[in-house]
Image (cartoon, rainbow, N blue to C red; front, side):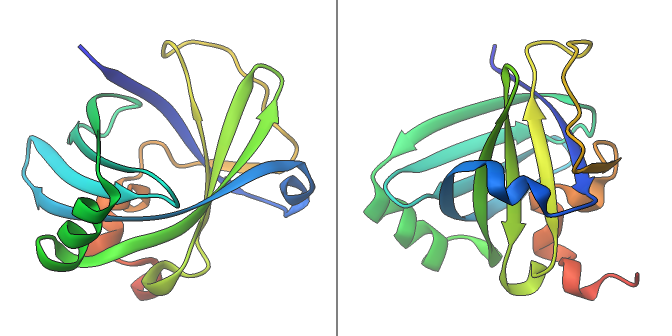
Length: 157
C-alpha cells in the first residue's frame, strides 16, 4: 500500500531561494473529488502522472501515482478535468537528509508559497530551516485540490 507522509509550512523569508538546486514547472488538474479520494493529472516539464489520494487531511494519506504519456496528460488537463489547472513552480532545496519541495503558485493562486517535506513515518525528526514559518499541514485550504475551488487570490486575509 502506498502512503504519502508530508508536513506543510508557510515561509517567513525568501532566504531559501539561494539554496534551490532544481526548479520544476508543474500544472495539475482534477478529474473528480469525493469525500473519499481525489483523482488528478500532473504535467511537469518532461513527465506526466495520474495520481489518486485519499481525502483525509492528516499528514499520512494513501497515494497512488502512475506515469503516463505527456501528450495524453496535456489532453486530459485541457478537456477532461474540472475547474482551472493549478500552476506552480516546484523548487527543490536539500536540508540535511531531506529534500524540501517549495511550491510557488501562479494564476489564481499567485502569491502563495508553501514548503513541504516528505517523511518515512509520522514521528520522523527533521531540521526546520530558518526560513520556515507556520505549519499548515492540517489546514485543508492549502492542499492543491482545495486551491481549484477556493483559490488563494479569493481568500480574505
